[in-house]
Image 1 (cartoon, rainbow over the protein chains, first blue to last red):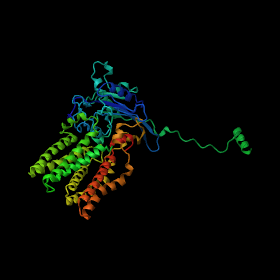
Image 2 (tube, rainbow over the protein chains, first blue to last red):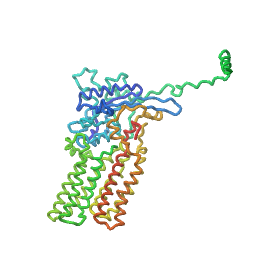
Image 3 (cartoon, chains in turn blue, yellow):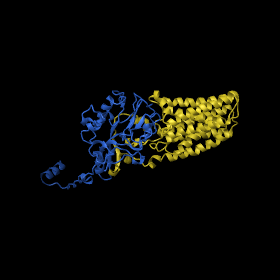
Image 4 (cartoon, each protein chain N blue to C red):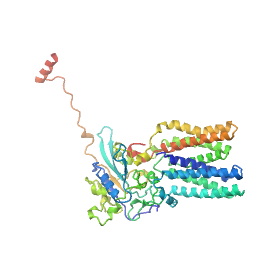
Length: 246
Length: 291
């Protein structure tokens, strides 16, 4: 049903460390691979080898630059997927009951057997976390790899979302935010984990860790060199003067 | 937002149909028999064509039947239910009126009220979206109701009422455009709030996450043709309201004039609705440094 649960037993989600992410897009590819083979309709590509390729992805990595006047700029790689919001605006707008938020763990999912592909949930999401698959005509979104995290057929170390398992930099962490002692809750407390677009009132579960302060951003640019004196002495000076005369 | 032709046709044409039902439900114009049947058929036809058009933008229409289930939370579901119920109530009222010569005023008032509630539910699909600050205002439902009832007044030949409604359209539409132009800034969302990186300085997109287009950009970061927006706004108001109002005031309104008025009004309505979508900026555009 499209009524949001008043609270969920667990709050499963991701912590994304913007200080550590190197922007390799491995999480994007691993997500596409897993979710094309498993949960629901595959993530299709249109015109994949043509002039105008496009496709469905549940996770995309943007790269931003932040710059203060007079300082060197910083580059921040920024992976973005569903934030499994506590007040998920995508769920109540759904007319068919296809979108729902699970009471047991807070994961926001789409039941593709009910989705009519109207796209209103994607309109309601401020983060661009939902994409309508052009081939299947149903809404696709991050499932937090619900088919991995409880899957006892997988070795225990694989029972985490595909993007987290893949990240070579260790920039992605998975856990329960309802438990203050969990790895993700501790990370958020230590590093000042933040919400994206808090003004939208969505109460995202996923948190982002801001880049650590640089040692001295202002001092990273080398001071300008002293202007060389006009008078050049010694052999080079003689050569310079002689060549001038010729 | 992408101005899908199916959605533009749906919201304008069905609005006209429900607007006509508003007046027919009130017993205006005072006709009977085949004339009443013709008016009722036009109203039902417009509303139905509009509703059918809305199914053309569905990715998976076979599941559309479930859209009647989530009325507790979803404005889109409420709209579907209200539209079907209104069509049914109006059909019974009109059939009794035209074929049995038995117009039941109370049933008519009910149909009128339901027609307006249906238009309101349509408008709330857009007005509820915090993600599109330009739409997220009480002026959105007000304008949808004004456009529907003005069109209904013109179709049912209630020209005095139409004049008042067209005047209100000019005033509130101009206000909506002026307020809408600063709505995104006033919403408090920016590329800095979207990324949380504002503390590090001015943020810009250095590299897109993908080289080509994607669903998000096509659907929600539609910027094609916006440069003509100012001209289109003038054209829309002239065609939808000003020209029809002048023709009502200055001419002896006969069938030819009414046809010209309706043509002008409908073309203006399409322009207005195109602008409604094409100029609406979704906050997801901030992640693409676009709006």
